[in-house]
Length: 374
Ligand SMILES: [Zn+2]
Ligand SMILES: [Zn+2]
Image (cartoon, rainbow, N blue to C red; front, side, top):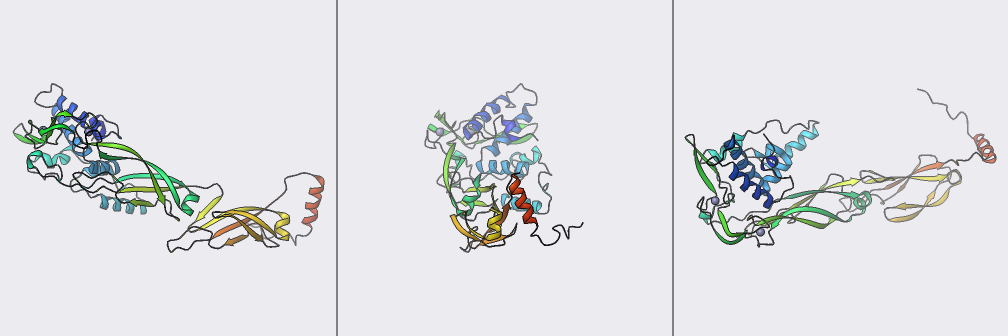
């Protein structure tokens, strides 16, 4: 089955106005009663099915996330996410997308006549307004490791559905019941003795038309708005964590509550600081003199510079633990910062330096490569 966006000829990030406009144009072109195009009826069915999904922000976001799987009758997004993470855990990954959905299956509810009426899209004639919760909006954000450790603010860009500002969400002026479908949003067609219920192309299934349709939202009453939001990153956040920001998703309809904003956090690797769970690791170069004689050195930490004592006789790879200077934990305490000491050799061929180094070799006990066996 073709991609629903391709069927409607709109880009994946098209807003509701563009989707609605395209549907109306295509539905008129391929209307089986008037169209002279080949396969008009098949096209018409496809266009209807695609618009059914893409005009519904919740179903559209499921389709974006799960593909055709999301078009099946009785699809449950929460359960699908659960299955998917289980499939990932077992190394499967390909748990989805196997059983494609046929057009007939997708149309099952519409073409049997008495199929379940979709919640929410009450036709004009029913005069019932259904409060609908806005859709959840998902974004991901990349943050610096230091921000993840200390916590802090970050700006995110997102697109979320909102009530159209130009028409106040009405869709236009001079609202009236659509005469083509008598406000039901659906028209019945007799095709080869079969009853087919399809979306009304005059009103795009909404059941209403306008004397003056709003040009911004093409009568949908909704547009997609670009937003910049400041998001608070809690200290100690882990890579892949999803922050759920209540009420910051898409606006609800007819007084329904807004959806949530789900922010997936990705940590950018730090060039020097490594994270090991709640602990941090930092390689610290020291001189041979500092390592042998011991010294007080200054090191950077997530909390600023700290003075640290290098013990006399420190070896390469020795770890100094700075307690409570690591990543914040859920219980309010913090992990540790481990300083990994790395003595640095002078890179010089000055004869005196070489002579001193060779003299230093004389202090090594036994063979340095003793025990080096494979
Ligand atoms: Zn209509
Ligand atoms: Zn508008």
